Length: 388
Ligand code: ATP
Ligand code: MG
Image (cartoon, rainbow, N blue to C red; front, top):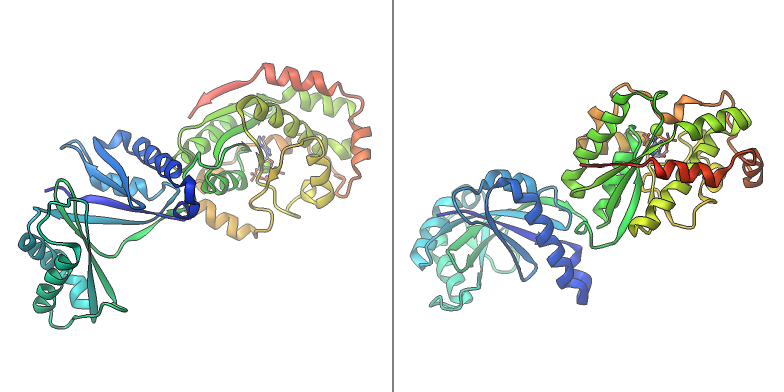
């Protein structure tokens, strides 16, 4: 008989009236995540998502690994199955809980029945299985108040299931339950992590990359595509928007004072990101900025960058140490790609002495030689979309 997976929902349980739509969103995200792993039935009942193999094609081991990256799930249990008979359940529990029962000093049994035709109530079933387990493992006593081990039994349509200690899920909220944002994705270490963190808050993301060919190479773009691809594991399907940025950077280089190059470039990124947001229904811009990390990430520099957008700029890494960001990047699997040695558009025309504490009006004056609106339109007209 087939094992199943039980996914315990996290914060979405708290969401009262919105709960159902959150649950539906999560079920949809789990289904999409499992689409390549065979046929499964995915359903939600009492704040638990059930993943049941529908036929032989279903690869439950792969499914177990895959659902660990789905936001909105806090705990995952793999449950063993048997026929819906009280003695079959006892036999299965004695066998599959052997290690747990030998290790623990106390336990209790909790039962749930979604099949109400089962001839015992949940309480009767818990008492019966509890008694038999206590007899089989005399080292482990029943304690219904603070047991070391909780043995769960579920009697469902197709079978009965036994499970114990769950593993941790990814936490967070289901992607798509909290709106859409544009995420500025460079090839660096930081922006894949900031993208991950905002996705974890339930936001669907539209990654945007500014590409300065030939100052940055085709490999630099491939690297960003690869990073975006790695992130789909958490963020779901995404479409990367690649913005041609060369002409803007050349114009800045030719017509603006050098110490403002980076600031002006970043203001263009924000304006273009806002336009993409307007077109796609996104309500915020995500960046990997980190206070004090580089000249363009002082408070004054951020003020001058953010002055050109009316959208909230979400910077989930703003207060983190670099080591912590690196640890995250390793954990989510983007670090090794991020450190591949391809040039970044920010460093193509880096000023020798960048302004670190600019006044907004200075930056406005510095960029006044440019036809900002025309350059933004031209870049948008050349957008390339890549499905990840
Ligand atoms: P990262 O490691 O993400 O590249 P960084 O420390 O190098 O960050 P900057 O180069 O100053 O910082 O960029 C700050 C943020 O601006 C990035 O985290 C990213 O969100 C965005 N950004 C920078 N360059 C690009 C680019 N070429 N395309 C898209 N977004 C970019
Ligand atoms: Mg960078």
